Amino acid sequence: MRTMIAGLAFAFTTAATAAGAQTVAYPPNEAGVNMGHWHLNSKDAEVNKKFFVALGGRVIKRGDNEVVLFPGVVVFLTRGQGAPTGGTAGTVVNHVGFVVRNVQESLAKWKAAGIVPEPSASGRPDQAYIDTPDGLRIEILEDKNQPWPIRNEHIHFSATESEIPKMQAWYAKEFGGYAWTRNNAPVVELPGVQLRFAKADKAQLPTAGHTLDHIGFDVKNLDAFLKRLQADGVKVERPINRNAQTGDALAFVSDPWGTMIELNDRHEPIQ
Image 1 (cartoon, one colour):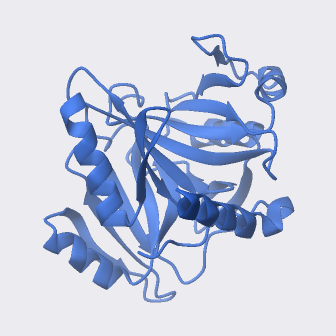
Image 2 (image 1 turned 180 degrees about the vertical axis):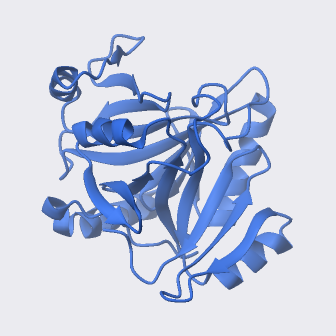
Image 3 (image 1 turned 45 degrees about the horizontal axis):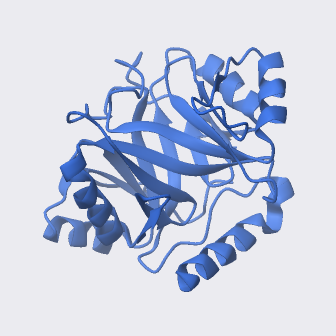
């Protein structure tokens, strides 16, 4: 545990060196992996952009589109497939999580921008939930000592109880994550994100086509990385596609429970 905590502290310190510039990328782990992005299906990309900017994100131009940057994650506002088939509730990725310095102060600011929060069911002042206009559920938690006003913290998966240990083991193995138990619940640590797993009464819907269409990880040496995944029986949804101008490469895989995952091998991080 001490080694894991020390590694996380190093990653946080490194990523925070340009906190004022809202550094996005965390150093990759030994497997060459760090958190990359969420890719949304948006009914109206402009509406969603305003939502994420109100939360504290920074907009940049990426090709023909705009993306919103937060420490630890890039939010792509449209998948190019039209309106989503539904929100994240009921899908294998139930919600995602941000951490702010002060939940109540953040909620007051967001309310003024028209964002309606959902208080913690247990009455905790350091926890709340908000939803994007298209139904991406976001948990808000608090860390008074973090260097950023807001940062990406976790992705919360839902699966039946018998599948949760398998999910934890799969993400730890395939992405080089550190598996441990937090508050009596299984988690996997990756640079820039914590993967959490919660019990559902039945198998959940795949992510593709929903508001959160897929999650993305940045990887080093995508060719070798994808070959290893294939050797482990991981389903490849789209083979490697390489940008002839930049040399950047991407591919799509899916986990056994229906989470679509984009793998990006970038020469330069998005920031």
